[in-house]
Structures are given as structure tokens and as C-alpha cells.
Length: 537
Image (cartoon, rainbow, N blue to C red; front, top):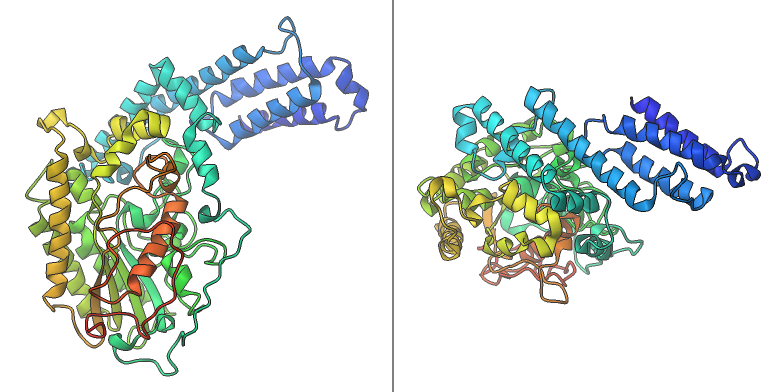
């Protein structure tokens, strides 16, 4: 079917560009009838393609524009559809595609990865008890979302505008303004620091590490660290479910710092080009983060909570030991651990499981494994942010259809909204208090001295502590920093978070920033060594 459709597209482009024919052919009216016949076949074929949006459809719409441009306007009485009718036909096409997807989901021809729904934290325990039951719930939620789009003319038209990147959509305009920090600029960044980047002799103490002494980089966490949806232009289609691991703020190594990809690994590579362990590329829909070579030492799993840090730590140890390029005994390593968003998103479902006591107990388990199994390790333990401000972005007028669907229909982060099934009414104060308790628990654990050693340390990075969503010139959340679900970071958000982490990392313990300054660029270290509690005194 795809081959036939592409063939009809080649007919459109070939005829309307005059390929294989003289230019008079464009003026004799033949183009109109041939174009319409080809378009009709392409539409009919494309309606059967199993996807809400496909590369084929992009080619088709481009071919329509080319044919209209070269063939000229035609009258309503001709065989070519008038503009409004053409628009209606496109919308009907999307409806038929949604119906086809729903049909295949219901019959089991297509499945939705369990992790895509577990990322809300709601089905975590269900998945552990009965994976099939959790998978069925995942599909049912996805189907419910598609039904609501399909049954509403308003939603369907908004959806149509969204997947065609309608210029009236404020998200489109903001994403285009993202510019340099999305890595889409020709401007080159430099980080020229007047300092000794790497020690002449490999240090034996974690308290005398220079940035260039870090040989290996890794990360633990959830979908934010996995880069979920960071580079997606659309929601509820395949690319939204991709993990853009190479763009991860704490573990991604796509492109370079000079090209505007200001992740922590790319900044560290300015001091040590031989750094290894960073994740690269995109883990596409149905990809397995546990086995994919793209993940490298970024062992974050979409949907994971603090209770999973034990398993992630074990996985990280195994990966390091299996890597022939890593000398476990001599290489200095840096791991960033950031977890808790899914715990906060699910606390209303099980307050005891997601209490601060349980949260920090599980993080401690993971850190204990790292300390016991990985010598020469510097750990960044990043405080969780307050997720309450994210609720504002669910408003339809701010993020258009994407935020509204992701938050209300797909139930992203359910505890930020009323949940009728458990008789829960959203309580911003309680949710904010839980985040504060998580932050305090992190400091208490690290300040206990449990992880102070000569070849191991844990340093709290606090730049998310009092951080809210970046605002635009109108004082509204700047959606260009967020992925299409208005929860995860976009490429721009990932890059800016990378700078935030670095600028926190190089500040002495006790003087760490507690906010994320989005206007900052990466700074040069003022201390000779990477700050620890001991060398910051």
C-alpha cells in the first residue's frame, strides 16, 4: 500500500514540476485532472496506513502544495477539491486513521508499551502484580483518549492543526523561537576556562578531582533523564513515545557543547574529550532501554520511582563491569541521580509508599550499592522540584490541544488533578509539602556522613529546589522548554537543565544555587577541584 501511494506522489510531483514533459503541459489543464486522480488514490491509500501521522502524509501534503503552486488555482466546478473541502477531507483522513488505530489496538494487532503509561506512576504496583492487567489498562486509557478526540469536532480540528504545525498554534511559534538552545543555530558556543583541566597524575582522592579527571559518566532516574519526548513535534503518535537519550540533560552526548547541546557530558567533554558512558541517539517506540547500546550508562527508566533505584544501581554496576573501555579500579566516574517526580505524581494513590521516609529509604539502597560496588565515584544527587506549577500548563489556552490531552485525557501525573476513582481532590499545599519533605530527606541523608570517603562522595545539587517553569515575555509558562505533553523537558529544556546542573556542580557545598537561571551560560569553575563537603570547608 505504501509503495502504491508513493508512486502516486511521484506522479503528482513529476507532472506538476514538468518532469519528462515540456512546460506547456502545465498550462493545458491536464495537470488538474491528473493531479486530482493521483491525490484521490493517495488519500484512499493513506487512510489505510496504521498511524495517526506518517512520513507518507507529510510527503502527500507537500505534494499538494507543490501541485497547487505549479498547476495554479482551479474553479470549484473542476475535479480539484476547493480549499474548505480539501481541509474537510484531510480532517476526515485523520479521523479514519484514528479509527484504524483504535481497531488495531482493540484486536491486539498493535500494542502500546507498558512504560508509556507507567510513567505516571499510577500503574507501577499493578504492573508488578499483574503485567498483563497493567498492559490492558494502558491500552484502554490510550483508546479512551483516541475516542474523545474522534468524537469531538473541536478536538479533532485542534488535533488537525497540531499535527500540521499550524502557525496559529502558540506552541509552534514558541518552539521556533527556541533557536540556539534547541541546537538549531549556526552560532558556536565556547567554554575557554583558564585552568588546568586534567590532573597530570590521576588523583587518588575524590576531593582533588578536576573536571577533566572524570573518565566515565552515567545517570539514574526516570523519563526526564531518559529524554522522553524531548525532540517530538507531535503527541499521541510514535515519536512522542521515543526517548531522546542523546539529548538527556545529565547523560546525553549527541552533537557537542559548541553546537548548543549543553548537556553535562558535553560540557565535561570540553575538559576531557575521551569521556565515555554518555547515551546517544533516540530509543524509538518499543526499544528496550535495558539492552539498547544507545543507552550506554544512562540506566534511567521511564516510569521509575525511588523504589527502583536499587535495580538501577545494580544495572549500572553490571554495565560498567561489562564495558571493556572502563577500568573499574582506576577510572574516575560521575553519576547523576534524579528521581521523585513519579512518586509525587502517585502519592495520592498510596501515601505510605510515597512518603518521604519510604522515598529516601529507597534512594539510600541505591546509593549503598554504588558505594559498595563502584570505586572512584562522584555522585550528583539532584533535588526534586515542586511539580505543582506544572498544573497551570494543562490549561488548553496555554499549550493548546497537547497539554489538555496529555494531562486530562492521558492522565499524565494524576495527583495534580482530581481523581474521582479514589475520591481525591487536588491539594496543591499537600503536594508541595511532600516535595519539600523529599528535599529535606535528601539533605539529611547526605549530611549524615554516610557517603564521605576518599574515593566516593555524594553531593546534593539544589538548582531545582525553588525552580518553577520558565516564563515568557507575557508572564506565562514558556512552552518551548517543555515536550509536547507539557511535563517533560523539550530539547531546549534538556539543554538548559544541563547548564543548570553544571553551574550547580562547580559551586562549593553550602553555596549551591537553589533556582534555575535560564539566562545563564555555562560558567568556568572557580575552585581548583570539583566541590565536595570536605574541600568546600
